[in-house]
Length: 297
Image (cartoon, rainbow, N blue to C red; front, top):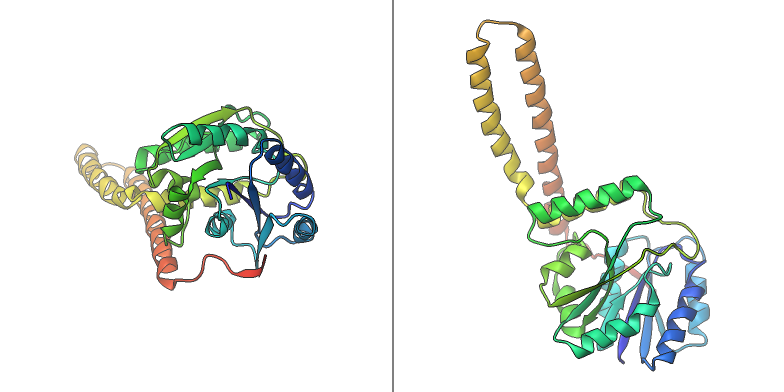
């Protein structure tokens, strides 16, 4: 088996068949031996019915069906564990990850000393402005405070050698942030770019709130800087308070009340940061499985 195609799916009944026809057409045209592993992440529509229909006519189609929605990162992990190919690629079913790039990606990884070909959108044309701004800020902050490098526009769509796949699967942490893990394992990687592509059907399952939580999880998983902020700000507040008291000694209470308000506000923020880290520690110590398979082929 040359290529394992991992496809996380959540309520993608309208795109499954179109995705399959496109990918198989390209693989057959370029004589690429393949398997497609659909990972149904607890869909509430007819996604699994569409996948099973494809299985009736193609023995190269496999699937994992979760008992509920566990999230895309868990779906990626499950698909990579099941993959048998010399190379593995993660793709979205909505065709925003263009299958036309697959032959080029395979050619690059075969003809050079690299372990991974990743993809990045040149622009975010067609995406909501607020989401684009938030994504850019997140990438800048992550790169500044963590030991991973995440480029704006980078996708989960990437082709990896078996050695890199095995390294990613071997990581046992519960709070997985795949983009960070892809960077953290440190294999040689080449990036290719393409113009943003709209979904073929349906709508994005990512709300602003879910994206915010995803970003916060990535931040906490790969950076300990927030834990140092209380100490830094505590010192600054202490020094600032001493200077303020000396300058305004004996004067109005507004200054004192304002200072107290700022202090307690910052204190609440830092307690919140500590709470998030403790929550992650709690999750790790529970040792619950990252997903539960309801059905498999």
